[in-house]
Image 1 (cartoon, helix red, strand yellow):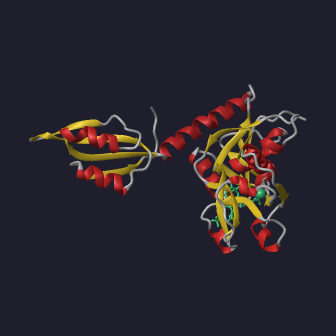
Image 2 (cartoon, protein in one colour):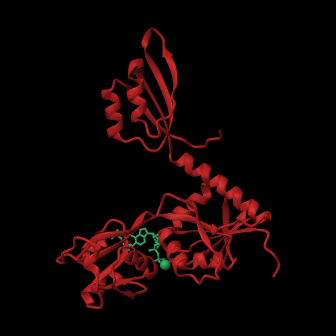
Image 3 (tube, protein in one colour):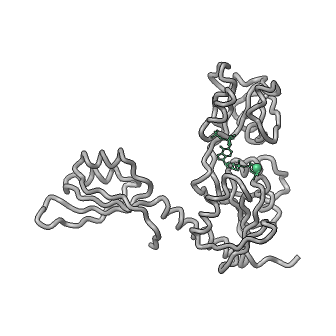
Length: 297
Ligand code: PRT
Ligand code: ZN
């Protein structure tokens, strides 16, 4: 097989992660042309292509070397790490991506009492994540029967095929609709960039490094806000403490008002209404919170 000279990134073909992943890659300056079979998207400009697959296949495709990187839920990646054969190359989480947030939780029928994990002892727990659930049960010293189901896990208790479930939850509406109650969080998840533990040392490795650098820039910009306001000089400490990431603000003197300054600060994170109100109480006024488009140190 001829070695590939283009970087290949696997992502979900159609599902929850598809749109945000496409948007993230677009922000990294990548443009794609979709092929007729909708399996590949060819990069225009940069030598980076996409492979569109089911999310569950992504870690395996990276391990086999079919793809170099992948965008996948941490839940899918961790399950792969826990259940893959030891001869399979290790695939790591390279970056959290900040979308696709959810948690893998244990849920029980609403009427069942629950105070701690020991109550799951001897129960049948249905899940599509036997590796993650098994690890959590072991860590909590619980012996339960793990029932593997590929889908529709939430109906198992009503069907009588399980006593509890372990499944992904975001709003909790699905659990509610099935008269289930979340009782324990096994893991917090979000979409991540997955890749081999060591990147190749050839051109594709250089491309992967470039992607990581761009991604870091995009994530940093996405999470940054430029905050501007006027404030009394003696309230600066109190105000700075309220700003996300406690930045070092730039100050400008206000003409004719020696006690007042205009403050400008680049913050690492969103600024809530509550934080703004507290800054106003501390004496700030004319506050502006602006998104950042690009940043180069
Ligand atoms: O076809 P393919 O295999 O690629 O897709 P899929 O059906 O396996 O995956 P998909 O698109 O449902 O999810 C992809 C990834 O999104 C998951 O691996 C998670 O990392 C992440 N994610 C985030 C979620 C959820 N939120 C989520 N809510 N995945 C699934 N759900 C389920 C949840 O289990 C429940 O059944 O969505 C339902 C609604 O959730 P509630 O709690 O809001 O009601
Ligand atoms: Zn899937």
